[in-house]
Image 1 (cartoon, one colour):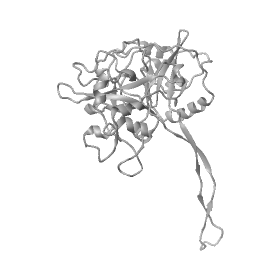
Image 2 (spheres, rainbow, N blue to C red):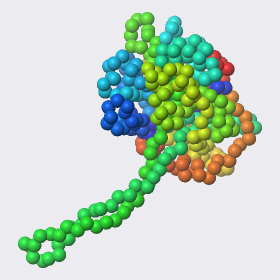
Image 3 (tube, rainbow, N blue to C red):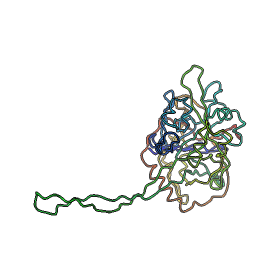
Image 4 (cartoon, helix red, strand yellow):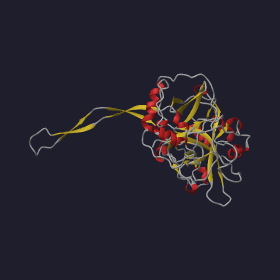
Length: 386
């Protein structure tokens, strides 16, 4: 299935659902990088499953508490992978559990899905892991954010601009028999022709994050978890919400953020800033319920057309109360919905419709229903960053 890490931004700070619908192999291909040590050109990160049997499940609608792909330096594995790769992708739990936390890891006591950049070097929850070099890149196809306008809320799917080019192929060989004599050799003639194919490069969102490792008192498998760093929105995003993820826009910025051994924290934070390289389109309001994981979560909708009636059976199922669980089957606290910023609706640029179609082309590669649900419609939540 395409890899969506759909972050539905319901909180007062930021988003709470993402899309992460790609399979592991496709994610690694989308994160290829130029190696600085092997001299072998571009390489792919190594995929490493999280400890304790925890799993990543591709989904069009991922909620906090789920495991999603995270890119980190191989140096965090104390030499185990240094000779194999410089970068590792390991799914981690969304919602940071501090290493010093006591008690149930699913109940930290405050919201840690997102980390405000303005206070990350002062707040203990984030300052401690950052000083240990635990900087990461959260990988996603895109995230959801809600636009509030005159009492109405409309979700938008927000993602990186997709790059396309025309691939030309030619030089087929045509075999001709120009003689009726069976002993004559066949003549091979090269026939030149061109076939043009439109190719779309899958470009994931690369969001700066901070992670930590919590070790259970019974010495069982550790829990790797993270927060997405957020900043004030750039003009391209501010008409929907006043906060946005800190997005790393090129390989140099990614390397500076995760390469904690060579780039000090004070230097790395220079890359934590608002960016303009985003595109977006409105999507169905059904994605507001994290139990709704249909591919149409990311399909563009026409806001001028009347809404289609919701199937009564589906509506009843989505409205049923459900015990929330995390990846381990443990109960986890209810996540909350939050206000979105209010500002006038801005019409989508015409060119975005083409980009939306390009996005759909590779998102429709198939869908495997994830086993993990982190559900219940989001409600208002209290955050430690507000």
